[in-house]
Amino acid sequence: MTEIVQVLPLENFDLILYFVDGRIKKYNISHLVGKGVFSVLADPEFYRSRCTIMNHTVAWDISGQYDPSTCIDLDPEVLYRDGVDVKDPLEESA
Image (cartoon, rainbow, N blue to C red; front, side):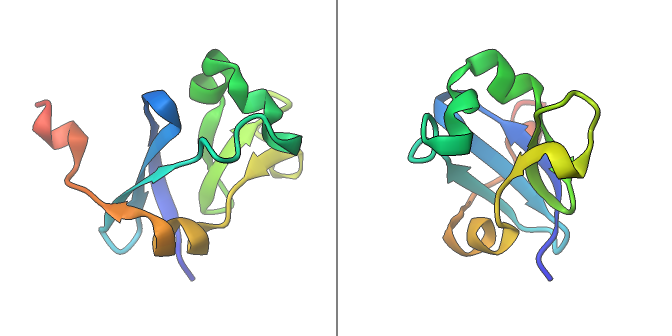
């Protein structure tokens, strides 16, 4: 099973994803923003402040209670398969 252990939401709806196997990938979610349940992500503050990890994947906490049953999440297998390998941006800025 593919697991994400950390996420860094960036501008332009890019996500930096840290996987349990040590791989770091970038995935852009702009194709989802504004559609259906993802319409709330059009608010930049919500997109950044509510982005978290739940159930081993990227999620946005809708309720503010970190309840996995009230979140929007993305399939970690798709993120791993379609994400682009990148160097850790946190190490580059240090």
